[in-house]
Length: 179
Image (cartoon, rainbow, N blue to C red; front, side, top):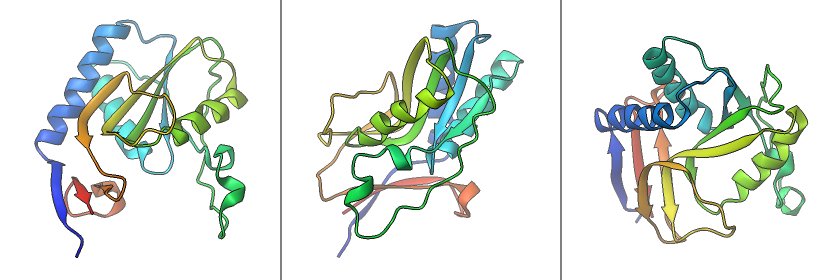
């Protein structure tokens, strides 16, 4: 039997997103040379929420793009069934920009490494910072850690973090620990 434990839901989720946006504003202040890249597939929903909160607070639009790192994964050729790519939509050059890379869950760090490789197709950023909603501690394969974290969760390797967004058809926004 799979146990399911609620980690985060509304209205606390909105507070977490607002706090992360405020932390970014404190750090960046001027967003004129800054872009946001949401990692496909599920990181884009979190990135849209953070961007919306930033735009509201700043009264300006921070450029938002979607980055798919599927073909940059180190396990891409090791799978029995082929991976399906998601849409990459980066309508700007990231050369010499500050990039806020956003994903919903950080586990092993391999997707972030792949995203860093995929990013180079759009230029060489001046700086990249990582924002994650959930940091799954004790699961890292690579020495990657977030600069901004919504919530840290201690997980076993056998457990999964399930993120349900209303944008994907869920009744309400909820994040579960399953396993």
